[in-house]
Length: 574
Image (cartoon, rainbow, N blue to C red; front, top):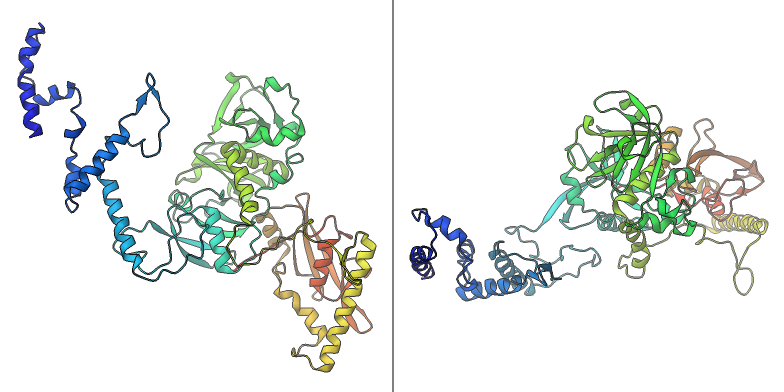
């Protein structure tokens, strides 16, 4: 009926146009005339595609759905053409298919009816946004559930298959893996995008969607689950992070930035900080490198064609920040003939070949860390700071049953419980003697238990020589190079450490410690006293009955080390 009405209106057009004195040929197709007409009333605007797709639903439900959506979407422009603030529902335009909402609503109602009759198992991960409710029939095989299969690998090369929803973030997936692998959740676990053939890897930001990242990876790319203590090191110590000569500010500030405002200026999108300095840049499609003066701004990475000039006519764009990510290059000297070991790369967010990568190189590790951190800060801004703050807010809301124990300077103190109440031992010498007394008491107690009949068949001497092998920070017979690689991968922050067997002395051990982004090694030698074996870092001045006691002591006291032991270098088997 509505189409007949339109045709009758068309029949009146020739007389109307002639009366206006307009000469035109009316032998054109009616379709071309209908395009110039004003839009018909909304009640006659029936979407045929929606009608065909919703044949199973009643005409009344379809009409009410379409009319309600149309009435919500009519006031698109108000106030002299200015967009008025609209809700997400009101942003829907009439040109979009209307049947999607109706079908989705029917599916949700059917889903509720299906699951309400069955006993639902409570969801063990309520804080994971978008996680499926673990109830029978909640993932019907016939309907698209919106889940994807992700392969996660640990450092030993073993993989784990995880089914995740499309909206799961990297942080949520790490929380899930921590729960399934029974790890200690200290908010330092990370998901790493690794490309073995290209020799690239980067740590995913906590808010990134894992499924989207996987879509941009090649078939040889994989996800790794590992520690990264340096992910938010900038927020913990922003003042000492960037050398003064690397940071430049806009003309209005006259170069005078109070130290307290350094962090705010980096996160504020309206301010214009700039990172500058010399970098080695690999020429595209060639093996040669050039040393150029480079500027990193919010708009992109530029280099000067004339010395250190900042004039716009001398600047050329090297890479864009918006559609790219920054990667650490693990095989720089071998694969790219890099001039130093401190190479990084800017890779577009797509399946990229080697020749499309923008390879860069710095003189030292600190410069590389500063450039890569500035790239992340300029690209994500305040979102990075929110990612850093979320774990502190979640500690009171976490429903996971895994123990949360973060070893840091502020969480470990030496205590004396010899009196009625405990007291904190501030004097390092007193703390050292207290540790020695505790070690002697532990040894005497274990000897007495063995005399009286201990449930453990191990002699205390044998026990003290093997008990450390159960600890996460002990890695057995690995090489010096492997220990360097692990420290590099997990962040190179002060206090990152591991213990390993000594390669030169079969009876000794080695403490590998990171301080000021340099890796140092300290030999732990056994020494005998009164028929007992002790371990010492300082030629017998401070002796410990086992390596666990040694580690716990140096977590509290620096002693002969350059810094306290803070972060254990940990590997997990998925």
